[in-house]
Every structure is written in structure tokens, then in C-alpha cells.
Length: 221
Ligand SMILES: Cc1ncnc2c1ncn2[C@@H]1O[C@H](/C=C/CNC(=O)c2cc(-c3ccc(F)cc3)cc(O)c2O)[C@@H](O)[C@H]1O
Ligand SMILES: [Mg+2]
Image (tube, rainbow, N blue to C red; front, side, top):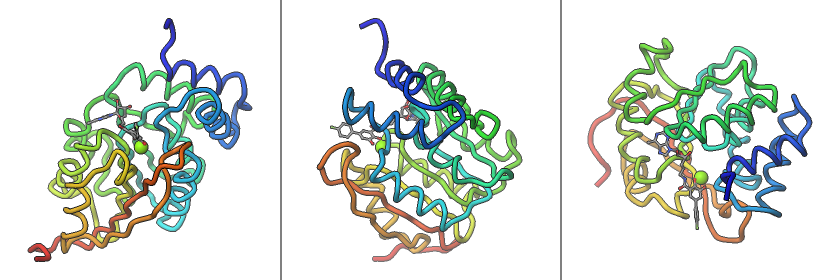
């Protein structure tokens, strides 16, 4: 096929969403994925949980791993006050290009900082590149086998502070078992699971919210 699924998703946004209206962009993507083609956006059911965790955290600095088409970036940014720093990392240039246009259609292009590259390469550069000391809120929605190495990397780079919240998508489907074992057994995190469903389906899935408790030692046995 000539166009990719992200390009067809972007087309649906351009046709059906009102420029400058983030909620209409979210609705257009959800409609496209429910009625035309499934795509791996966090979706409306898990998206509502994402919204509530963002709002209760009221973060000053936000990091997202795995922009894809920009759906969760729009969901998060539409809730943030003007001064909030929002950084999203995407390794695939084609997806990044679609995401920039989706975010622009929502009118949020001045708020987004979309960096192209791999999380493991970029996380150690966050302080130097953006003068960010710590992130108050981090959303994991990239390759599931990167969740564990990347939360360890965030800790090692000192990018998590006491009270920082890491919210991870898909901990049941496709699943991130090693990540779950780690955050649930570590004395440095307090974790809780939000039961939900895989986007646009009835398949069980959920989000894990892990709050950083500070630099402690030891593991829970
Ligand atoms: C280390 C690194 N650095 C930077 N960008 C990175 C990166 N690793 C990946 N990315 C980027 O992030 C997105 C990838 C997201 C991966 N998400 C999923 O695999 C996923 C899959 C499903 C799913 C569930 C049931 C099924 F039957 C099929 C699929 C649902 C989901 O919600 C998912 O998130 C994609 O845009 C990729 O380029
Ligand atoms: Mg996901």
C-alpha cells in the first residue's frame, strides 16, 4: 500500500478534527482506530486513567518514551499549564514526522519538544540538552523490553526525585513482566496497577503507576 497506517491516521485527523482543538484530534484518532484501523495508541479508556494520573501529579516536567503518532502526547499536553516542560522521544523518523503533524493540528506545536532518537541514547543527555534535573512524570509506551532498562537508566542518571511518578502502558498486553517484578519488589518504588483494557478491544490490559520513594538500598525479599 502506498501510505502507512500512521499516514492514514494523520489523514483522518486532518479530515475529521478541528484545527487547534486537542479533544477533536483525540476523538478523530479514537474513531479511526475503532472503525477503520486498529493502532497502538493508548486509547480512550486507558487514556482517561492517564489523564487522571497526570492531573493528580500536576507535574512541572514530563517525559514520554515512544511518541508513535502523538496521541498520548496530545492527551498529556492538553492538560498541562503553559510553563510545563514536555519532552517526548521517538526513534522512528517516519512516526516522528506524523506525530509532529498530529500535534500541530491540535495546536500544541509550541509546547512539544519531540526528540528523534533512542531512549537509552537520549536519557543520559536530558540534563545537558534541556537543563532538566528531574522528571515529575514519565510515561512509558515504547518497546516493552525497554521498560526495565530505561527505568534503571532514569534512576542511574538521577532523573527521578522523591515523588516522581512513572506510568507504564501495556503491563498485561503485550506485557512487561520483568519490569513489573522490578518496580513491585523494589523498596525505591511504591506501585499500583490500574486495571483496564487493550485500546479499542475487550482484551484485559492495564497501567502500572510507580512512585519513586527516593534513593534507598536493598530489595524487598
Ligand atoms: C527505545 C526507544 N526509543 C525511542 N522510541 C522508541 C523506542 N522503542 C520504541 N520506540 C517507539 O515507540 C513506539 C513503539 C511502541 C511499542 N508499543 C507496542 O508494542 C504496543 C503494542 C500493543 C499491542 C497489543 C496487542 C497486540 F495484539 C498487538 C499490539 C499495544 C500497545 O499499546 C503498545 O504500546 C514506536 O513509535 C517506536 O518507534
Ligand atoms: Mg501502548
